[in-house]
Amino acid sequence: MTGETLTEIYQLLFERFGPQYWWPGEIRFEIITGAILTQNTNWANVEKAIANLKVADLLTEEKLYNIDISQLAELIRPAGYYNIKAKRLKNFINWLFENYDGGLANLEGANTEQLRGELLSVKGIGRETADSILLYAFERPVFVVDAYTARVAFRHGLIEPEADYEQLRELFQSNLPQDTKLFNEYHALLVKAGKEICRPKARCDNCPLEKVPHMLDTEYM
Ligand code: SF4
Image (tube, rainbow, N blue to C red; front, top):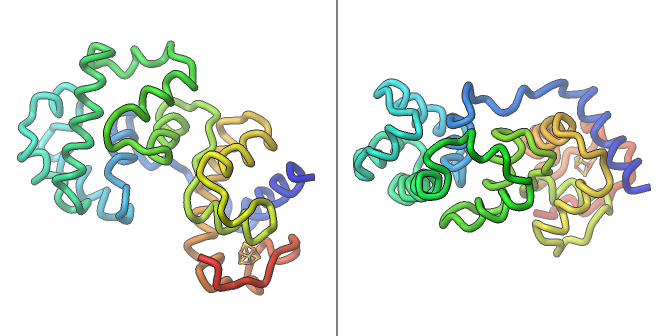
């Protein structure tokens, strides 16, 4: 039943919004950099930071490994919290060099749970960032959860409001086929719906999910 509802939600969102073409990065390292920089900021600001790295010809694992952290912070300034984010990027890159010889390709052999655990052990990489890296950079069937996901799931009675990240992830992962493309598109569609329609004040009358049973608690989140 839950699986049917989740599938129906996906289909209705896809019919309305179409493919979202995530993740908007050209290479794996760029996707990872974007996933780390996008915390607490909008994507347009991340794009400016990534553009700075590209113009400076620094968007490679090795070049960012060797760059001084203050120079890195200056280049990613448009992404906001640039000192913290420079540290997080450096943490990830240092981890990559210390454990995998600096090569992202060396991570391919790791199974998904092992890789998730290792990513989460890097200071500054939280669950959403780790899962975004797994899904969008390594094409692993991992569902990415965020506030938009929680809002839609709760409003449609699929989960309790106090559900945590892992419970939400489990809701989607265990009730849908383990399909990377599906998880990729589904997350992007939930973000689209959350930004445009299922906002803190819900706009149910203009929503493709209007006919899917939902609560009237429009002030939630
Ligand atoms: S806007 Fe209303 S119908 Fe649409 S997802 Fe949110 S709660 Fe559901």
